[in-house]
Length: 183
View 1 (cartoon, rainbow, N blue to C red):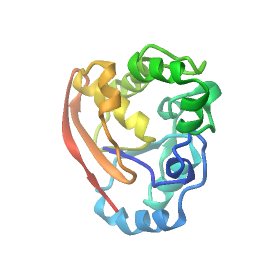
View 2: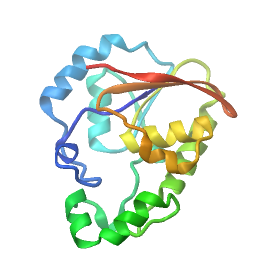
View 3: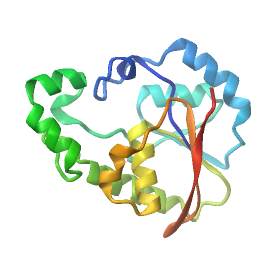
View 4: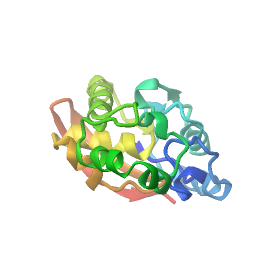
């Protein structure tokens, strides 16, 4: 089960990987929604502060893991989508159309899918429910990998804050239960 973190300042301003603080009202909604989550056998979180704070608000003793880190956007970190579009529209267009491209000097979408997919396949043998709190890009990468979609499908998936995406099964045979909102 994958849970997207609550909204934060970077999502409100469409900034790349800004690690801004979570919205306090959204954290309150997460605390309220915690009872809607089944108790996991194990819980993991992205190392990002917003994900860790969301996991805490959900009452999870989640283990941070670097494999669940957000997409590394290199030189674009902290910049808004509008700023990048205004200063380097060609690079942005390449990045949005070629999953193997990383014009920002960070990680490509294809590399993110491979990283998250490797971690996901490594959890397939875990007994019981595994719950993850991770950035929307990580959730999208997990879905792309689990369903064997082409990496270009990454851009066609929308993951709302504090939503749940469920994957069940095992490596090589994942099933998707479409997302629902917790808050």
